[in-house]
Image (cartoon, rainbow, N blue to C red):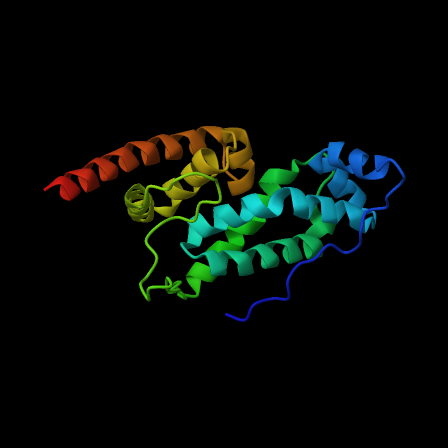
Length: 208
């Protein structure tokens, strides 16, 4: 996969002596920033990228199982956002729209059948889910969760990733996936039930 050029802020925010301009951008909602970007204000895009790129990268890492692939897809996601900015409707919520773009980027990658095969420094396939949070990691648990998530059908896996790992509400997930909120709740409920069954089975296999 040819990596796209790294996404960088288009320009530095205008600074004043008391950094009031930067502070005001930080306090603005995603929707206000997106409206400003659609009007041609590049610093608004910079703020959106800084605010969301890390979380989108974590989501795409869980979607694909590969940190390097996720990094490429983050760049593609935000480039797609730039190209599609004219289709962002006033009154729409920004986060579901952004995650819909990221989800489609991951689906397109997976449809091409190019499964990630990056190696660890020891020359082995990675088994865990990338975790950017501080503190000790339970690699065995990460491996079990990864295996259980991969075993779920996509229709159940994606709502769980968005709900459990991205902290999105069911209404936001419904907007992201183009479904009704009740349909998302049903899929997530079934997915969580199946996930518990799979994790229980994996724990049993580990103890035997």
